Image (cartoon, rainbow, N blue to C red; front, side, top):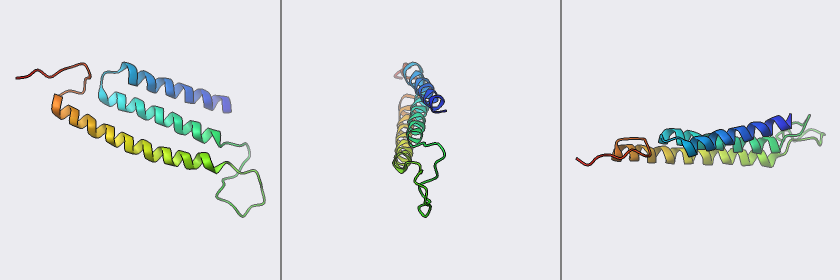
Amino acid sequence: MIDLIFLAVIALIVIGLYAVMFKRNLIKIVVGINIIGSAVNLFLVSLGYRSESIAPIFTGTESLNMALATPQALTLTSIVINLAVTALMLSLVIMIYRHYGSLDTLKRRLKE
């Protein structure tokens, strides 16, 4: 099961890198960066996985087989950072569109 998760992480990173490197539309580049961020979140969650473990929020139990809490906290932090970066990138894309009139990275607006 773990190998499948790591393969999914690799596939998501490759898809995101493809979008960032080979797409010309700025919105598609932002989506590619978001996919890479989701792959990082999946990787962090998979690091804290233990088979037959319980959530670390249940502290009153006698079981010592708890999932690691640190990767879950890092994932929450990563989600918030990814949200802020996405908002910043989209605001920059809007400003670029207003200035140049296009979201294409290779198209230049003709001076009138």
